[in-house]
Image (cartoon, rainbow, N blue to C red; front, side, top):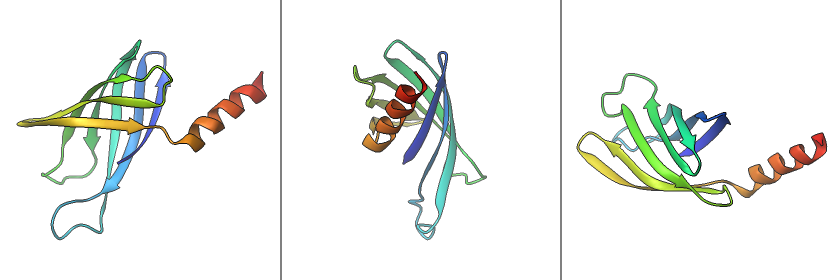
Length: 105
């Protein structure tokens, strides 16, 4: 999935979009909202899918932010299943954020 994360204080929020993997619906895009928190390098959030599809609901994510802030690695959990995840910040977004911070100073 593609995620947009916003951090304000220790609250993390955002959105995701991803292709649907349900047979017969592969041309659809799934949208979700994110809400959670970060403390130091530990991060957790809940991804809640939008819409009424019974095959999707809420996914819990817990992980660690890398020292340079470019990756989050951890585990996702849904009732009855769990797995690993890795989120990587795109280089373009990081550069844009750095450039804006420099220009404001």
